[in-house]
Image (cartoon, rainbow, N blue to C red):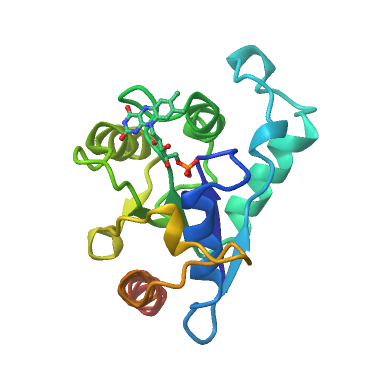
Length: 182
Ligand SMILES: Cc1cc2nc3c(=O)[nH]c(=O)nc-3n(C[C@H](O)[C@H](O)[C@H](O)COP(=O)(O)O)c2cc1C
């Protein structure tokens, strides 16, 4: 089963993207981390354009979401809010059925004293509009600083890696239990 991993940062040496790359190496058995890499190609959301034929980048985003068993999000905070490009991505999902009640978690890597609290409060609010099931047990705060990221772009800090593994375990446990009930 695929877990779609979405970074809210477009920065090449992003700590959030490093966390997701690391998560991909720590996936529990039976699960595969899929990086979403199309955020920069999405057009500005306009409800007038949310009609067939949709832009290919929007079709790709929605298809990837539909095909995933769960979502894992890591995003920075910009100016006390979600980055505009990431909010734009979320706007392309709000009116659709792709996210539905999909199990969704985030890992907050902010090393700032405010813990990017406004961005994550906003993420919770926006996800509520999509219908996503937020798996609270899997939503964790694991501060990451650039010195923790190695030359391969992976986090080599054991405490962070253990935290990522625990978050993923909670997320896939939710997926498994939802599949059993369903
Ligand atoms: C324009 C801009 C605004 C920012 N605003 C905030 C902020 O409001 N709160 C915060 O905690 N960090 C803020 N930051 C710091 C970023 O969240 C931080 O650099 C983070 O590491 C970026 O994530 P990335 O490494 O994944 O790209 C801001 C950075 C930039 C460039």
